[in-house]
Every structure is written in structure tokens, then in C-alpha cells.
Length: 228
Picture (cartoon, one colour):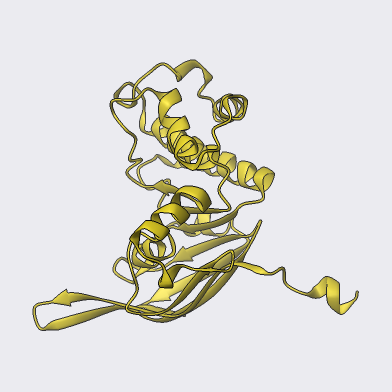
């Protein structure tokens, strides 16, 4: 096999020497202490670690929901850490899809509108694609319902469909199955990985589940703000 075929694909997401602290009673409390990682298009990465190890903080920084104290994050070559609030918001709309543990659906919108919401913001709403996503995720019969009328598993499927409907280059999933029973979690995970494979997006998932982590292409563990 040639050296070229062995080469790792170019990184879509690069995190270099990232530091983040939060205010504490006795001064700043370090949460991330020099984290570096890379993620290529089509790659899946599980981020594990104990509560308080910095997993969600790292996820929020990569997604542009917060800013780092030091270090660098690039997505598709764009330096996220050098952007202002407006530029970070635009990158989130155009490049990143989020799946949160708490679903974060909009209660006043039905399922169809929730799925379309992010894609419309990104200017990439495709009605046929949204319908295909809904069908794949078993939501076709629920499009006119509202979040409160759905089970937890159904709401999480809507959240996944919303994240994927805008065809993001990067999907960030923070404990996406944490509120689901084991069977539903496995089903949702199967569907999410299948859809990610179809779209070629990079997937970074925070999880406490070793079983789910082993489903991902790579695993990294955060311990006290550092990758172990």
C-alpha cells in the first residue's frame, strides 16, 4: 500500500492546545487544560470521561457556543477562536448541527417545522430531503404533532432530523441518548450513524455509555480537563 493511501484525510475540525476556566469562589477553576484533537469528514469520534471532566465544555467551544481562554479551533480551515459573535453564529448556522440531551425542540412548532428550522436558517431547506429524513427516522406519521405529544425517543429522533436536515459538515451530539431507555437509545444510535454515513458528516459525540462509545470510529477520554 502506498504512503498516499495510508495518509489520514485532512482534518475538518482541529483543536490545538485549548484552555478554558470558569470563575470560582477562590479564583478561576480550570476545566480544559491543553486539549488537542482532530476530526476528519466522515469520521466518528466518541468523547468519554467522568462528570466535570470538561466534555460538554469542549463540545460547546467547538460549536462556537462559548469562547476559549487560549488555544485554537478551526473548522474547515476557518479559525473559530478569531471570530466575533456574529461570525461564530453564522458558522453554527451553516456548518454545525447540534443534538442535545434535552432535545431543545421548539414547543410552539410542530414536528415538520422543528425539523426544518435549522435548515431554513442555513438557507438549505429541502422539503424532499426533510421528508426522507422523517421517513428514515420513523417520524412520517408525527409531522403535524407538537413536541409535548411525543415520547422521549420520538423527540430525540426529531432533534437528530433537525441537526441533519441542514446537511451540516460537523455534527456535535452531547449525550444524545442520555434520556432514553437502552432499547430506544440503541435504535436512535443505529439511525444516527447510518445517516451520518450517508451524508459524510463528521460526528463528535459526548457519551457516558461505553457501549455506545465502542460504536464510534475512535474514542478519546477526558480526565480532569486533559485527554488521557
